[in-house]
Length: 380
Ligand code: UDP
Ligand code: GLC
Image (tube, rainbow, N blue to C red):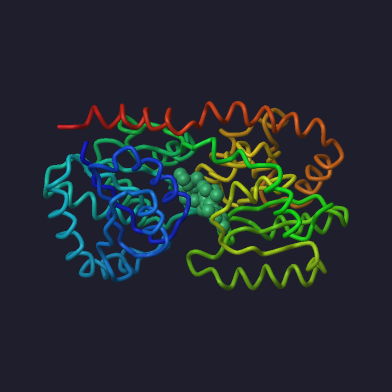
């Protein structure tokens, strides 16, 4: 099947990393069209997935944009729409992986009569999106898409609550290559030495630095944990959240945690870094649509504590394959962390169980088969 995938980002966020795994089986006959250049393009190339940057101008619309701002950017979009429509004629279907890709993909689908699939990686709720953005996404999906793939039941529910058509919406979780998360003990030992925290209890936080990812909650929790508990914050501000980065550094200084918190920036060796941790936390303050890092922690056989909302609640059963903590509650988070430190054996049992079940539930081959089945029904 010839698929034209569309994604607005040049940066490697979770939706983009997910797309690499989805596009891989189609690499001999697909194209990923990006609306911005960046390291995501390089990752696609490393995976031998054909990619083309279709737009060199930044599209100035954000999650909070109003109708007026959206309309202003329309003139900028016309050449892109024409280009995508021209390319789409050579493909059997258009697969929009982000919201701006949905806008362009919907119009290209209309002009070329190619079926449109929208992969919904977001929770379309007021806490994440402006009313204009929610209405636009729902309108375009309902009128132009033949299929909406939601990355969790939580994303599907929010889509329907916003007016989305549930009849064309299917939930498919992200898939993972589980073998990537088996790391040699010697490598882990070396990495822990390099981190300079050989004998301590290391908590890992693996998310882009953004207020709603809640790194500040972990820092506050850490201040309520014993001295030997340290944290690594892995990730960078991908979408210009520099004020938040400064705020985090300031918080670490104020709480006198400089020796216990390390900022590692954006890294490509996530499985290795996870293997070097004793525990992984996820602290989003707004409902997480899916939460790749949660599954990655499970596959790394690390106990994981996640914020109890959105997709995370579909991934974790508290005390069975991980732990759930009330969002924005650093005291509760600290208590669970301390409990994990004190009950290492029981916690490791939970992590082991999580790894076994996650390896089956999120196996990339199974997930790709689910997607292939759905796409097959759409092929003309
Ligand atoms: N990630 C990464 N390098 C980093 C931080 C994060 O490659 O420095 C990856 C992480 O392993 C995960 C993805 O980025 O696969 C983030 O996806 P998630 O669904 O957790 O959150 P998103 O950022 O997409 O909202
Ligand atoms: C988005 C969501 C994240 C999800 C990822 C992959 O980036 O914010 O929760 O895991 O897409 O579906």
